[in-house]
Length: 229
Image 1 (cartoon, rainbow, N blue to C red):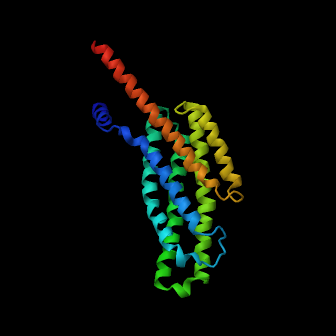
Image 2 (image 1 turned 90 degrees about the vertical axis):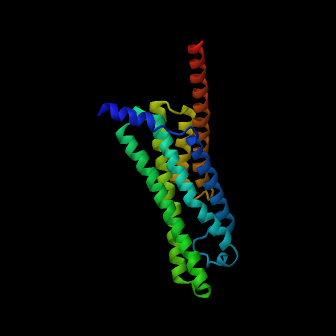
Image 3 (image 1 turned 30 degrees about the vertical axis):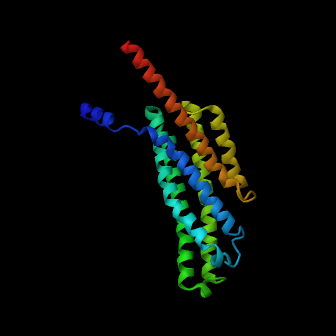
């Protein structure tokens, strides 16, 4: 049984390009947030006039969300791979759970917004400034700006804590994660662009992992050459 497990682990190796997943997620999420920012007003009680002129831009943003989610799952896998045997069960549960809940809330908000677009195409005159529109708009706003943001902050706090205790990432990056997480927890209602700090932090962490993996690969290759000579 042990020999079979060892062979399985040897065959199932993390792809070298997996660290790029975090960068892809960050770029896609920033693009999504920017497209929504320039298309949809901040006020959740607005009548919905943007559906007439900006529905195409919003649809593009919503279609990018699933790809960002897939990349984020790969990013979680990269972090767990770097932790290896150092992964603590308690922090691993909160870390993985908050990441999955973040994706679930993000997809839920995107699904509600997509339902608005589909409903508008079916009956544009009846939807704008209707009770159904206001309910769906408020639901998407609450899911995104309350639950999604809070899960992102929990993910950052947990990941930063794991980084400090295990050393898989620099301490300064973990401290930056704490600062950004507190900004999301308490300042998301006051700073409309506060959520962008999450993909920026993931981007910084992914770049470090990518460069560190390349450095380790170069170091191991150099050591192999020395042994051969």
